[in-house]
Length: 468
Image 1 (tube, rainbow, N blue to C red):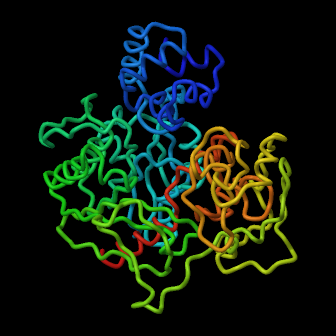
Image 2 (image 1 turned 120 degrees about the horizontal axis):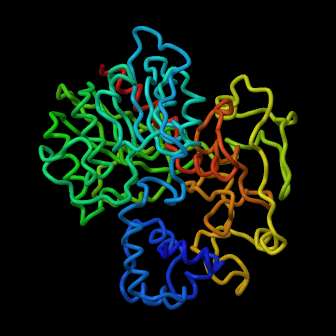
């Protein structure tokens, strides 16, 4: 195989070095290596030269890679280790509203539904083994399906989830194509993208409601045509839909994290969007014209200031690079948010700091609000937000899958000379300390960074429960 990533790894070239050599952003190179789109021809020629291979061969093999790449997060190398249907360990209680979570990942979104005590998760599907294991561990009432959604029959899915009342999920946006007329879609058609499969499941299982969450970028994807086409598919399936951009910081999460939420009702009900409880001074990524749920404290004095980073993590003991701790601080009183995350937990987990190199530690000690705050010449590349320190008196910026690596994003602790620990990241994402993550450290960090905050799931579930 001579696709971009395979060739680069064979030559032992770091991704950042190759990006710098051909004059592209590392984020673009990552996108091409994941098979999300083909590089422009002029860039592909530079890449072929840098990788010591033929342009024609590289282009042909990259196209093959894109056709065969596993949809969803991660590289194509992260294939399913098996094809499994893992039965539930606990039978769901009678009278609860049943939830099916598609593309469930770690299950943070559906975990929020269960926090309401009105919903029970009865099924979840993902194609990555560690994500499915995390989901299974935290959702004992759910049957976990470890498989590509394109290879799951509708009746099997409905039976596994006990004919759910609501279907939720966040289809990965990779490879979003122009949606064909909905009635032309058929189950098992390999041409369907993941959004189309989500719509097919909704049409096939006929839940009373569905909730689709995704990145704000879907609003403008495909020349702003992708979302209207998706909504048309749901309308053709018989659902009245509404959508808004929600910032989780407006509902008590210590992180500015925006998500596009699409809600659909089979019975044509209007969804009453939850009113914000907190105010955050955040510039939305959605643009001025996008439908957003926000609050102005001048006209609503009842709202509280947004929860800050230190209000979420100050009960965790200080660490140096490479250190870890399994005990909460005893010399401080936890904040209300920290008590909410701690619950009855007595032992601290996942609070281990990345072991930084001497060079990285030198950069971290000089870090400020953005990369421009570093002495000139200290770094040669990176985003403006790389190598920068978080503000203690504000909500966090949006976490990424690399929040333990300062070279990739803004993730340096407000006061300590290190990146955030996995536990601190989980706190900023609203995962209770009792939530168990499966997999290696690098994989659980990805799970945390990719997750939909349980707090967001909970507030949507509470609004749905009131309107049921």
